[in-house]
Length: 137
Image 1 (tube, rainbow, N blue to C red):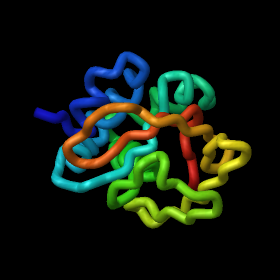
Image 2 (cartoon, one colour; image 1 turned 90 degrees about the vertical axis):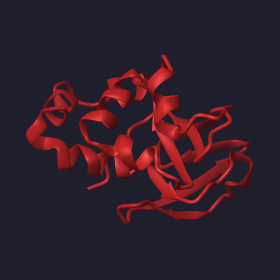
Image 3 (cartoon, one colour; image 1 turned 135 degrees about the horizontal axis):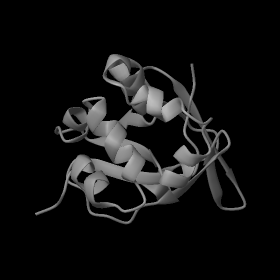
Image 4 (spheres, rainbow, N blue to C red; image 1 turned 30 degrees about the horizontal axis):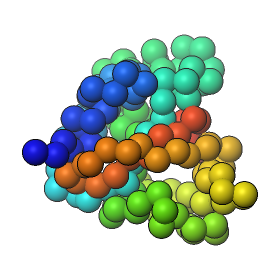
């Protein structure tokens, strides 16, 4: 049977920080629910670009709500396959942030974050890998 988004994140060796974050923020529950969701999943390299100490702080139990909000910056309701992303698309996240899709010469990005498709069959949506964490306030 197909895995859900949380299960995929749990086993992807490039998503270890995301895995910790998803569980520490209780977002694992949303991301394993029916959905479907489109998840722009920041890789470990994306998290490494953040200022030193930020993730350690966000992973503390008293910052659970802030961490959940950070993860929600990357989650869209509905399934949008990589090939269906169009230049100029405005996507609205589950916490009401707007993400602008830009495509130049076949390279797909949201802000300064480059996207690549994660080729996995997922029961409750789709994951696209992202090389930058979306910190929108």
